[in-house]
Image 1 (cartoon, rainbow, N blue to C red):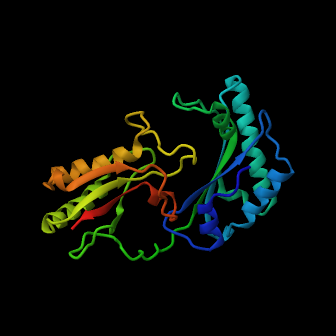
Image 2: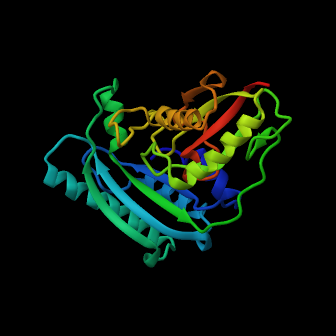
Image 3: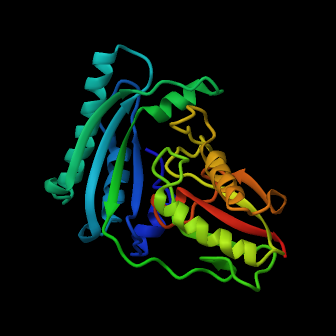
Length: 272
């Protein structure tokens, strides 16, 4: 099993929670195995100890296998892996009633653009533990980070659009997002000197897979499409294209505020 991700450590060990916080912890298995060896069991226990169970709203457990073998066998193996982790969680004090999903998903097919198939397969032989925490107030923004467009912005300032969020796997703007962008467009029309880059971001992909697949286009371009969706909407609202660029950053810039907030778009001021 790999080390607990830094985001998980930051959130759980510091006792900080954010709105609709969701973290994913992965347990990796040996080929054709569904049991935990001593090291895996120890690391899983450490992961459980890091959690404040009073803040957990629900847990989902999903088991997977690599792409080798027959479907029926893989579904059984992935289910056994999921149940192994469920039993370990319960053994260490997690209440059964908050484990809302235990599911074996079977095999994960390899993407055509994967170079190291052996490494990819080893990371597909896993169980993902998805933990949802109860809401809490969001943190204060850091210096140079704003929640809207202001008059005296400087080059390098970031506009964190906390109400412009996306559904998992989607680059489509929600109705709420469009309403917020209308307000942003009016401010950009007011402060005509500002030029900016629209940055698209994603969550919840493995570290070796920087970009995610857009469920509408079926291509690995989700963060780019999110940035472009905002770009096109601002053009429609009469913000000149000459003032804007857009770029996808994949999963390379997590906020450390939970996955909901990593499915986002930010504006970074490039000229004032």
